[in-house]
Length: 90
Image (cartoon, rainbow, N blue to C red; front, side, top):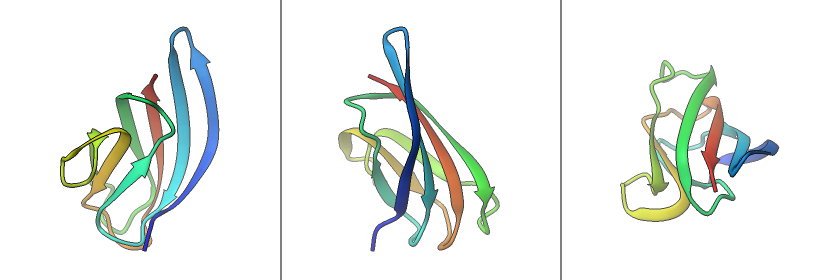
């Protein structure tokens, strides 16, 4: 199964892009395709998380840490957790 990911917005600041997604988890780990070529920074903001909002994220990698440009690996969340992911990059 895959996370439910919905793109809320995207914009450009100078030479950087910002993409905002809402995410509903259906497993503890997942790699999320941000639509960016490279993720410089990402912020996970909890909306409703049974896991206590302690999700871990890896930039340009899958949830196991294997390199994957443009992806954010998420781990440490619970099924049903809802969060917003803010991704900055190019």
